[in-house]
Length: 480
Image (cartoon, rainbow, N blue to C red; front, side, top):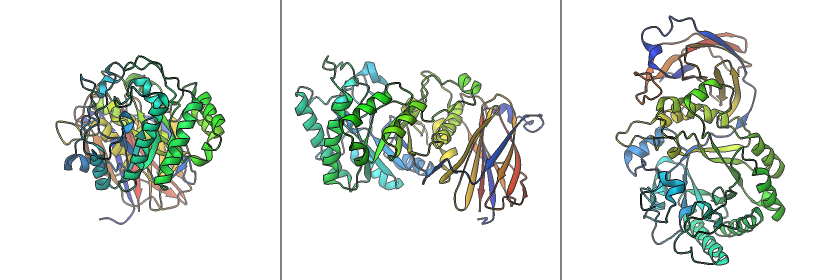
């Protein structure tokens, strides 16, 4: 192993620029000036996924993939049924509304899940990660997910059943690596329940009462548990009113809770839209949500427990690999964010981080590893110039710069790193994660080493230039 300074460049690239003329073209140039002393966000990086998609398996290959991806947390949606401490190995069997979320269920409305809580706990132990449990609340009516054992109960009895289930969850989970408890899921999106035919009379004030009950009972049995409230999809106009209603009903919640939850999707995002708007902040918290958080919960960290892009029918794993990397970098632009968990089923035909027919990473999995492999605790830059986005992180012994090329052509990035705390001119290696077929639909990207690049340093300022292929991510990793 080389213990000297090392520069690694990772590129997710398309084939047309690798056909013998990658550096024979004269590319457009984009200039970036990064201040290494800056701080956008600072924490031990936490990236996770929602577990139990149809491609997840309780076997060595899947667990090894999560280790390689450095997945630090798993989100498990127990909001679809009551917790049964006597049957922890079973799948979830509560009914689903196929019209609302058929992509998650079979033709009988049963969840496409492969293992129960004990299986999730086993994976958490194997990969040394933390568990998120999503607890059932009455607000889940909006997608028709009530457990048949309680669907006929009156409102008070249902809430009591949910609270008992949550308490049992917390009691079991405190020794099984589940630390975070989301009290419900997207609770502000109440509406018609196709299972019962009713409309849930769910308000922010009522949800505040349930959140208080869950919080107090969970803390009683598991004081170390972390509890958070869920609701307010990012960029939704009703986020402010929803959270304002919660605080008005129970002002102390803002002090007693441990975190708040946000979700972020780019439902409209296809490759053409993405390439035309390099200045758009894919994955970043919306302005409305950031202001609401600052107003009502300024001391609470934010966990983005669903992050993804969903363009139905679009099969572009290479493009999504690039997008996944960028979304993680953009989420880290916000100081309050501590976790970001991808929702794999929202990535078109991929359905997870691992291909079902092989042990290869999907496009989303490749995008995650392009970020998690090199992420450092402090994010210190995120800029756009022309068709390239540049973001950077640093730690005690390493720094990383990512360059995302949105265009269909070769681009040259000239980077000045000001106030560097270390010498960046030692040996380096150039790596490319490249697709031999070179189209957005390809899922044959491989990681290869390709020579080296020059770094010039004067005092604490270092300069380097990198040619970035079309629709690509280039990663420069300085490692001492």
